[in-house]
Amino acid sequence: MSRFEESTVLNRLRIALSNLEKIPAHKLPSPPHQKRRASVAIIIRIRPLSKSHYHYNEETNIDNSDEELSSSENDIISIDDFWTLPWVNDGIPEILYIRRALREGDRWSGQMAFPGGKQDPEDVDDLDTAERETFEEVGFDLGNNKLFMNVGALDDLEVTTTFGKTLLMVLCPFVFIQLTRESPKIEISGSEVASTHWIPISVFFDPKLSQKFNPISIDLSPRLAPQSWILQNVLKTLIGRMHFHCIDLPQSNLTTTGSLETSSSDGLLIIESTTTVELDPKKKISSSSSPPPPPPPPEFHNTTLRLWGLTLQMTSDLMDMMYRPDEEPPRRLDASRPKFDYWDVNFFIWLFLKNNRVFYRRYLTDFVNRRTKWASGWNDFHKAVQKSIIIAIITRTSIAILVLYRSPKIIKYLIYLMKVKLLSKERNKCKEYGIVRR
Image 1 (cartoon, rainbow, N blue to C red):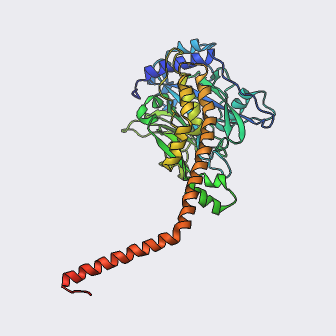
Image 2: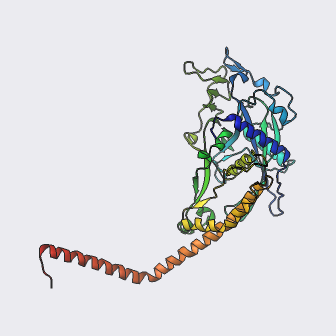
Image 3: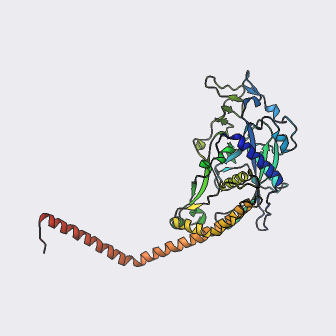
């Protein structure tokens, strides 16, 4: 699908929102040994493509839409009312992602994510957690029904350690739609969020971008043996690195801790602390109130936004909701399971997952359960990885022991070959100079 077929994307988004309203999410209760829960907010907006939908004053170069944020054109009661708004049907659907701040000890430091976080004892429920954390991280009041509408939730996910041995928490993703033409001002929490990005949904319909295996490599040895550098090197030699599929996202919109948001795709420059103005190469951009915001942090200049892990899985679940129950969806965005450096480890994983692949294909037409079945497949994957790594370690260790056991004979044989080679060279020289050796 072309990135510019926005009408098709809008139709798919309409199907997704309808499915989210009608089909309840699969909720996971917290087990007695791990009560920790977390929630995230998947925020979708439709950015008007036509400039006539912006409240723009050409004489003062000021966007007068702030007063419009608290109310939409109509009192929106349902999602059907939302689709009747004139600026919705020619807009560009986008999803809000954040880039987490670089923090030592944070498992998800620097990664792309959705706004959200862990549940506090004061939170009423999972939805309350998503709304509170989003307000703390980006300043969006998701509880304001004049600005946002909660259209449903995706299936809960289990967050585990690398090989699925330990449950860390249950993750609850909620989906919100922005009801206003202009987005509220983003106010970043500098301690938790480095930047925010509005990514067009059409990006995920492009198979050249989403289906290309573009891995991010992780060294597992520090996680498997955090206290022993010797064991880390042994594990690094035996099993190598783990490669996770990821999608490189375009940096079309950016809001950093300096409150700067730019958009190069539609000719608009949006400066969070000042105004919205049109880019014109013949005119200078003027700001009527405040000085220019500071540039993004140095570590985020010219960097690629890499979507992978749990956030990619939740994005894939959302994309799966964009098809009618009687349609068979295309390949998932996260269909490529992680791989390892060594071919034999990958081969054994593929072999152990044969039944899992057959099992999942049976549920491709089961719209309600197929996302849950895919998520449960990670348990089978973790078991397959453990078996494959054990086999690989045993195999490599056996070969190393055999080599060491046979090393004296091997060394003698190598010395013999070297002597034969030297003797052959000497004979050739003798023949060249006509020397006869006795």
